[in-house]
Image (cartoon, rainbow, N blue to C red; front, side, top):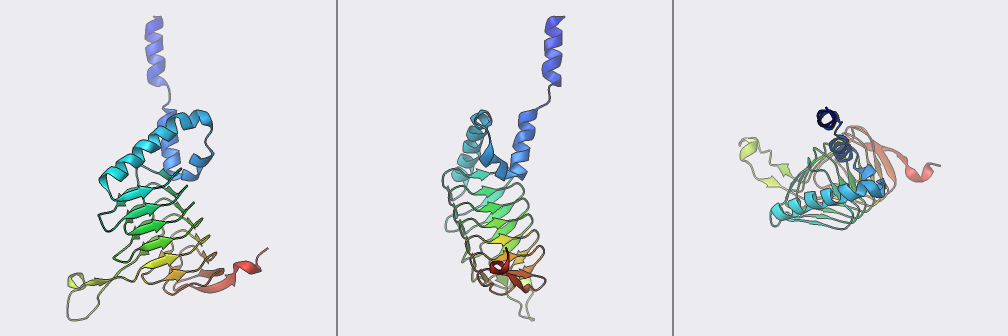
Length: 214
């Protein structure tokens, strides 16, 4: 009877670790405040996830990063993805190189980035909310040929340090966003954004300056 009870209890016990991994995948900032007892399993788990990505794609990852296993990273030779220290990439994100991340860059769940030919560069300590779209290329649009048959062109996208990009924002090819800027939720950025500027709307326009805030 006692052995049967032990078996039943082990079957019925909630799988907290699997749920904890899922929580970290969608809220990766929690990884950086884990207690030592959780790091004992979380660090080897992350080492395995990151080693897999580095083995199958052209990806370099600096120290103390977090990548959700549910993230979708694609980096053929010549379209590398490079991550600085303490970056995080959440679940359900799609990243296609070339992409360069500085240190402490956060990419939340559901983002979609394609570096085109000239790449996406994101500076240190920039935070990107969920479902942000950044495409560093455009299709040709000549009227006498179907769009899908036309060559694409690429200028690249550059995002500075300490930039906050709100949820569901979109950034088009050729845009440079200056250091310390803020991009409002749902904004569509079609032109360069100055340092410290706060922009919102579609197309995005300047609505303030961070230096005016307390």
